[in-house]
Amino acid sequence: MGTGAAAMRVGERGRDGFRPRGEGPSRLDALTDGVFALAITLLVVTNEIPTRFDEFMSAMLGFPAFAACFAILIWFWFSHHVYSRRMALIDAPTTAITAVLLFIVLFFVYVMKYLYAWLLAHVIGVGPRELVQPLSFGDARLLMALFSVGFLAVCLVFVALYARAWRLRERLGLDEIERIVVKDEVVNWAALGGIPVVSLGLLATNVPGLIAAGGWCYGLIGLVKFVTGHRHGRRMERAMKA
Image (cartoon, rainbow, N blue to C red; front, side, top):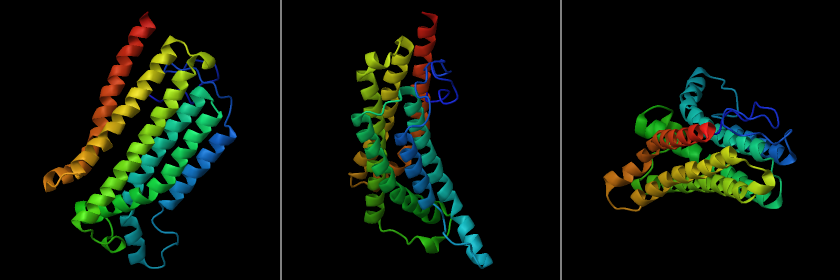
């Protein structure tokens, strides 16, 4: 789900079953793009060109964390881009929900950057240890909890965006296929939001093994995307044949 609409002309059904409604980027889209660009800039390993080779190598070792955070931000940005292209809604509630998303992203980027830098340097063993100090068990637990809260908040924003599109389905002129897409997007983001909920539950325990699982459970993202995507594909196939 979530691909194919961006390259289509207005009114022409894309591979995802949706007919794009936005004729071009709105001011809200421009603001969204700008905030995500700023967030990506905040991920940069260093703001200065290294003057010594050891500084250069230290910066290079920080790139795995940068790459992981960059991928997550691009995922969120593209998901919002697809939504905007599909719906072209710029009313007050949609603007407010998008503003909440941008606020969360600017908060989330700091948590995410620190978390991945710490994980790669001190847990996995890739990255400059001198840039991120070791964390106590309690601090690591709190950091992971902040990441889960931020991830959950982003998922809830996308649930709210698609739920609003569903409420306005008549005004938007959504046909049966498009309504399936909207409902399945709500299910997709709600299911993804279940992962940080599980993570927070595990982090709330006093069992070290379960607390550690609160971080590793994000490996379920791929499984959740596969299951919801497979379900969506079957529903779309039946709708197309009807």
